[in-house]
Image 1 (cartoon, rainbow, N blue to C red):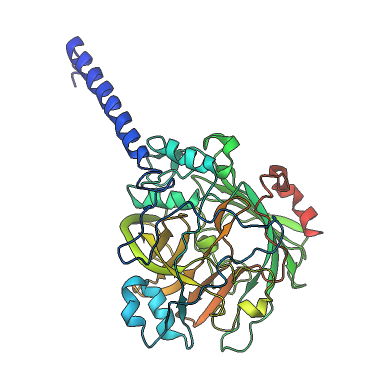
Image 2: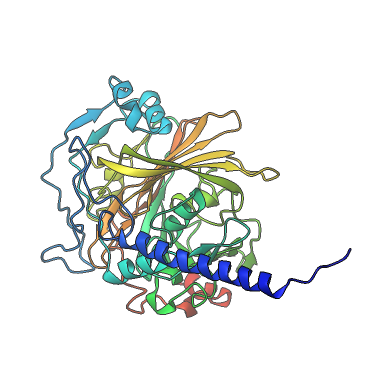
Length: 459
């Protein structure tokens, strides 16, 4: 094959075109970034309310709580609100357009399941650095050539406040700002089938760091490609006390997992403990990548950004997440206590995930509904191989004014095929969650070494 050299004039023309494209891209990015804080909120939500008034305009979020100090039981600023309406089996079809298919099935299939819908409060607000970094990410953040990994982004900001596709939207969830790290204790409850009692809760204490939320790391290179560091000793019951899970979560590859079993007194690597592997002790009701509404790499699915819609979603779950509750106050045999759950009308991004050709997963299709004001996944429907909704997940945000940020604590996952559910991360009866632990140095990187697992097991 004969290779023809590029003539000098042609080379000059090519360079000029390339330079011109770069010059055009910069103003375009600047124009996009200028929308943040104007018609859009600083992290990309629509600032205006909706036409029928059920969604108010965003006014900065409820970022302060008078008299509240971190470590105290979190107050409920909306305690005086009354439900506007109740959705139940008798009227669910009337509201189906504003619910996910899975939510409709929960109401139709579980006796007594209802949704009390309250006035909407756009409570989410964030530190100024999050707004600055989110704006800086416009035109800077990039998805890698493989189509699912994050190649570049500023830390402590949302990488794609105006997402162009589903992968970008999912990375907003994965980089959602929750502070630099936390520690907390909570219960996981798996009620037995048949509606008789709630069983014995599993109590865990988590230590977590979020390198991608730390502004000191500046970019993902400064975060060393680490998405999260997670350490979780079991406290109770006695048969599991002393068992420990350690996870190093990465931006572009499966997590590294180590398990310590107190009865064996040894640390084991768990290379297959990822994706759709069942979570230990959860009776096959939750997979690894269901944890925290989604967990792990994005490489097994294609993600379609369906668009934005108004939905009735779990929100401002202060009553569910109160440490002043007892576990039995929150967890009932067939669902979370309907007197504590709260639903509001919000705009969400809908992302449809379908398993990639050649890949396998227990759930070939999943639909995620992401809150426009926090990028948290509020609702998720998981479909089986026959195209039917098999599992439905819900989690309402809570405004942690000490950060400030909207965070998620408790969530529920219902398996419609089994007629059972699991209640996860229920803080009832525990210490108040410490969302400042990473910022203030109570959780440090040195804690997340495999050689140190025995130390946490003996606590």
